[in-house]
Length: 432
View 1 (cartoon, rainbow, N blue to C red):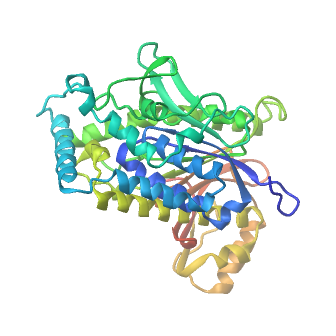
View 2 (cartoon, rainbow, N blue to C red):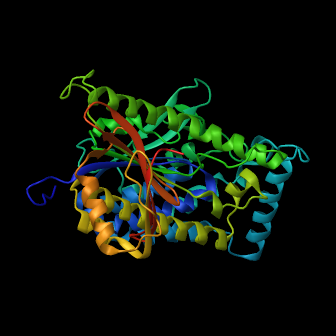
View 3 (cartoon, rainbow, N blue to C red):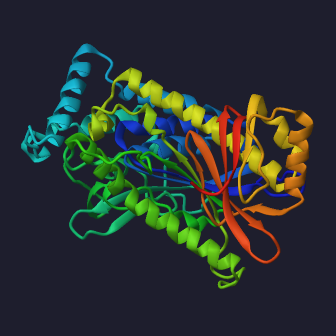
């Protein structure tokens, strides 16, 4: 472990939510983050994933094991381009599968059990061969000495209903382990491995989070594929199916993150003893922006292996990772109460808007001296980022803040828009 300026790096675990082809976004995020200079402040001590997120976590974990963090982006992109529908026959099959998914959502096409398809044609062997081209499974043994970061792959036992997180510190990671986490029951037969009969981990922990706490991280970073909120009530059959899929996929994640946040609050309030079995863990979420998803396909777009679609998701993941890295830099400057560092992050023409309970500030004001004076006076107040509440990075990054006047603390938010690492708009005020 390296030590910088007399301080050890913060221990981070990364949890990758499943979501079929949409997890190409995760590949972009991981590839950029692992190669980012900002990550030198952090030590990755664990990764987890479910379904497509399990594949991305595995590929990133392999790069960390091999000591090639900088090469992770290329490894992840090669996998997704290999998985893409490249030749004409494959593109035709991809179009049929996505269309069939849309028709099933409209109840215009009956579902087909994977057990009605000969096992040799079912796709499991093709999936294993795809994995074997990118992962050296022969070199992976159960890491009983725990020399490397922890890897967790989520699945559920169809027969017992028990959740299972295959752990690299205890279990041998094999192609069937990964397939068990990715075995969507409408596409694959259940996978028999490690003494169980497994379906896709989307039905269990999506992704495993609490199990990552065994490596005692300081922070949990979640790459979330299913968007949290929508602007309008779903009305069409496709919109309803899409929203049901998102909510179901987020259910276990919200429960696990709520457990961590509640523990953090109890520690902050002194109702749990510091130094005991619980520790404060900062939660950060990088969410796939809804705007990059095709509206007309609904959840069927998670089956789409069109190369252009996958490349767009990968590139969006890279851009989201850049925004996230910018947000980390902003948070460090804010914690240090460094007005100059914050103003140096502003892009040309950036705006600052402040509303109650903060002193008002007009977003049209561009005078550098007035901006500097406002930020300096802001730091003279008792204001802090509430690290017991998760930081969310979407198109906009949001932090929960605590502003105290000496008698009571009021909850408010800071919202920042980023282009790369530069802030284009910062709003301080109450939550909307």
